[in-house]
Image (cartoon, rainbow, N blue to C red; front, top):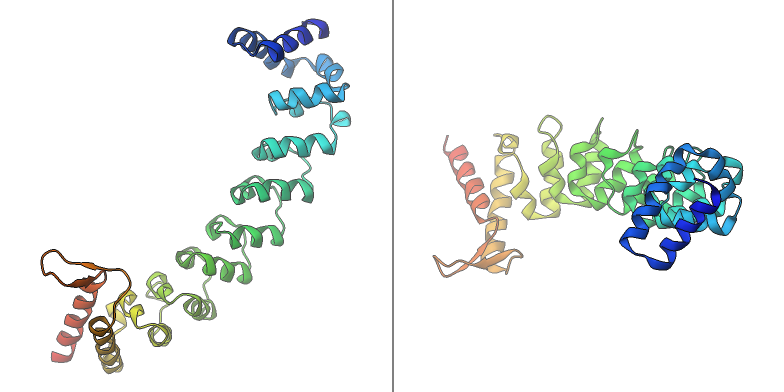
Length: 260
């Protein structure tokens, strides 16, 4: 098909927007991939090139590099951010266009800067999908997702303490082999409800009195205060805390431990 015939089909499609016109044009558009001469002729008309890009972003992949402008690339990325994965030499400007569109587009950026990674992490991007994250990135991830600690490799004690400072529930996601009594104590002293996330293996003869004291304080709080995440129990008629069963289990474990 020559240039004139192709343009007639394209103009018919633009004018009619009918199914027949679309199918007739689309069949010829796909063939452009193997028709470099025709693509080059079409690309020389800047306005036409923009229209063909709007029709299908694949057109920029077939265009001669010398005719592909930064304006065309950015226009394409605003329309279809994932198209950045097909851009051989990604510029910072292009990367920020797709990243501002959605943080998930970080996946398609070949060499994201630390600033881009931090930007995405600040908005909830999963740390496990970041290659070679820095300590600063790991801490940033913890601020937006307490579970991120499960995916941080080479976790240090300093990171654990910082994670607990950010969110006391972090202790529920720290592996037992790393978790220490000092970490648990920091969490519980900060928030009594952190007791609901401790592994019972951390309790021993040296610290059992501490856990008994803090559990008693939590029990008093449950009785005297209106806890968040409480609900009306249909069977007993009283307010019941969501973590009540866990608290009962902890109390029983401590009583059995003391009785041994």
